Image (cartoon, rainbow, N blue to C red; front, side):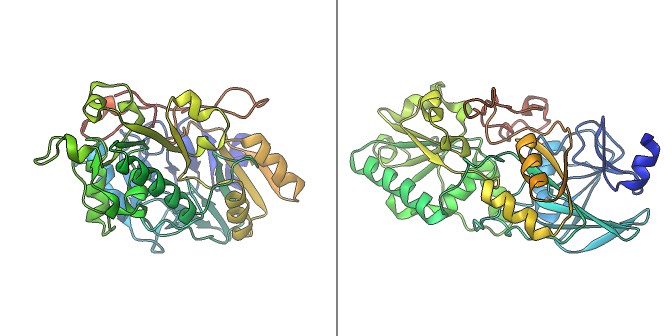
Length: 376
């Protein structure tokens, strides 16, 4: 079928600039500069600088403006409210990934498509939970699209983190937990037992805490190492949240004989903790696990599924075997969960972060890098 005819038949197609809606003449999370972009969330592999006009959820406004510039042409929508552009009805719906994350629903000519962006299905209390949106065609991520990836329930996860922190505090050792600064750090803050001791955060984490607090998300008080009253005695009882880029830097020396851990979905894999060189690994991700992906796709009722970034071939095969019309969309989306993501044996090297646009190029370097392994 000629390309022009294909675009007439599809509400979203893959172009060099990104995922494009032909009848609406706009892109969803484009990775090259375009005139009009709908942004699913503010992680840097989905939200790039240089677009003429941005549309995002209301709760993404603070982070997008801080990252991309206060003067960007940004239009925002609350969840469920629709606008029409060139005959395409566009609305945003909760994705449960990070604050402001949204699925994009497109309705045109009797067809309904949903582009999920990144999502997870277990509610975490820091953003509205994922909602399945009925559609004919669903565009899904597959970051953790392998049966090995199954996340522990949140109460189990936080009981593990609390027990580790409490034991370290009783032994007089700081508990340094490396985690992604946007999304994961705020989930940890929201979920831990803050009565165990003080909580200290890296300078890359605190600006994102402010964004969450401004949106009404309850987070316990946090300190920075330079704050008044933060001394060696306090640090020995503290939980310290820092991006992995802080590992091995001079900033770490002030914590003395600390215990360290790493929070990531990749901790599900044997050997991942050893490669990170930490004492403890906690299985935690802001993406859906294998059962979550299955649940989300089934909840849409879609008969056709396009799969982007991650274990695309495995997910496409599983969907096809289960009677769906499934195929892959080649994208430049990365994995903010980890820059050097390991892969299970036999599946080749980790996909890694496919598109590091890097905060070094950001006009606002006070915000953290957009990948756990990104270099500051």
